[in-house]
Image 1 (tube, one colour):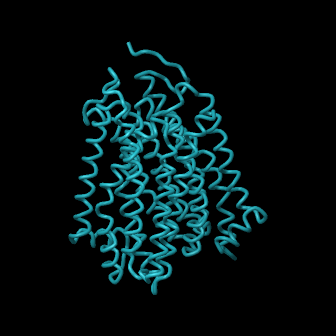
Image 2 (cartoon, one colour):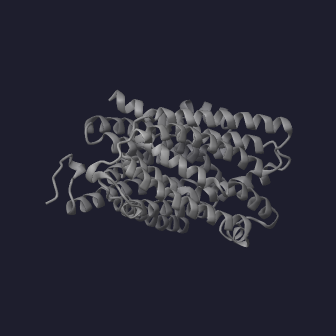
Image 3 (tube, helix red, strand yellow):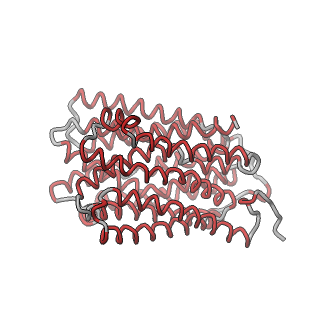
Length: 436
């Protein structure tokens, strides 16, 4: 049990520190003469970069599962390089051709005056994927070798460097350009990538050359595993703009968007800490099934308990009012949403558990189908809610998340069982049978 906790906690801490890096950058840009314009340009540019970076999350999952010998590691490396080159070429087109202006204007709704600084900010981020591909590749090796403490070291170093850069930029008065925020972010990613490559290369050299029938010898062998994860990420990317659009159609759109943003920020802090559950399933479930389930059960109780505590006057007053400065109607709306998001946070570790089982068995179509089903249901419920109950405001999105979470988990388990019934082993029951 202690070995699993020692493996998992550094990844959870790394995720929490990642959230802190964006707070640091926003603190720099908030000191500009026109903070709304500067922060908005930075936020939109980073949002698009995150959207395009989603394929790298699947690269890390592929690396953590398959990079257990040097032959397989090179195959995953070739896939990471191909994805990185594709994304960099796409980013160059966005940053230095009229395509970028069209995307930011018509997909993100950026106005005329703000269009140029947004495109300029994105130009700084255009080569981000060269670093995130290396980070994802080598972090996968670090994870499957159970050296996750290095991920915390890398993230802590990143935060420290970004904090120092932010302090210097404020002292120098470099706060009126959204590109400053992007440069700080890029340097942070480079630092984290360097730490991952430093340790990951050392670990990769110690891997056996080949593991008999377990080796992956070509990129083609990885595609049936990788592509469903890619589609799942794309479905998630569609949902976020839909939530914002639905909230803008409620009776009090300003309050709805602001309150949901605050409530979601609190919920995401806990979700990020639980976002690596699938990794403990991949690394430990076969041999320590009971301990893995115990940790997931704890997380599924801990996360909603914290959110429910924040929803009360006693437990959440110091945070919502004192730290975040939320008052009045906005405070009331946030507290009303937290119980619904608590239900979602209760199920999130189990959804990630189902993802881990799917990755472990190689049946990544299961989480893809479940995610697509969840997104379709979410879109239908949002449309229905806007039409019938616009007075729910921000609670509409929270209720939809709470309703969809158990559906997604049930679908993931159902699809996984169906796929494994065709090609054993059946991981859900803990039994293993050989294919005949």
